[in-house]
Amino acid sequence: MKWLFDIAVALATLAVGAAVAGAFWPKIRESVAAWLRNNGLSESALMDAWVAIDRIASSVRSRIHVKTAQRGEVVIEERYLTQEEIDDPELREILGDRQTAIRKFQFTS
Image (cartoon, rainbow, N blue to C red; front, side, top):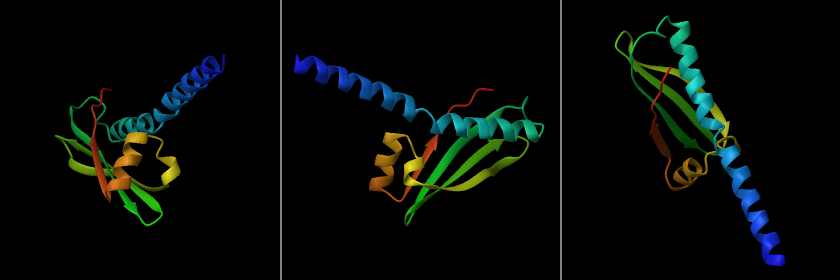
């Protein structure tokens, strides 16, 4: 019966991990959407969007870049986070190996 308990604990851990891992990227997408709306570009074609994350001593710098036909490339947000605020396990692993991680993402309004 202990094996059944172990399986239940493993499944619960996976479910919680999947729920937590999804919080970082939706915040990024909302920042991009808000910037587009605030700049009158919500109806324009977003050409590209990416996040550059740099590990700096004990903190992490996150910069959101957006490229539109009307404005070109713009850094729309720069903020400093702790390692714990990066809830994407894959991104945390990349930052453990390197100083910088760049992640492009698809954005649909």
